[in-house]
Figure 1: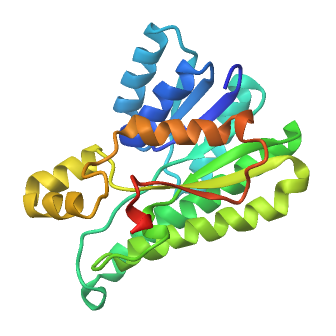
Figure 2: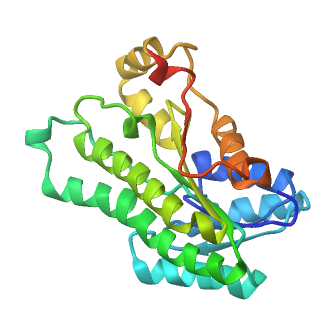
Length: 249
């Protein structure tokens, strides 16, 4: 990742924050993006204290104007965009499909699907001007298999994989690689809050994991770093499951 300029969305916590740490340890310059300014500001400060090159920009990926400004900020600061980790996403309150509100469905699709769509459009335009690059989109094991009472989330993460494949095929000849990550159960603020409120859900999730544990965010971030790097130069259109064997069952 040495000397690469990398944009990370959803960088304020969880996998995105871990990616910022992993990418900078491997030599990248990072631009951190997310809806909440405070965690981005704190993380940027910590990275700089450790000698990394980092900056941040507040952006809601569901807003096309925000995404345009986010990419323009990256270009104005660094002159180019080498890689992007489109990691921003939201979950959904678990309830049966026929009882799910339209507003919940729209919110999940706006962030998880339209958000990736917005990012791809502007990131690809920047990379075309630069002669190529690498993009990684965060899907989920829910983009590979279904679970119950989470239909909007499952649909959104399947859509991310479809967008990834379409972009990979369309821009391969232009030197732009596009891949997806499919993380399994991963420790994050959102997951920890859910398990605190629903201890039985944590026990059930761990029982369904072959390794009998959740991933640490850094373990998923390492996979993202590999896909973004030149070490994965012949990998495009792929979905890499980082799930401790969950989808092998």
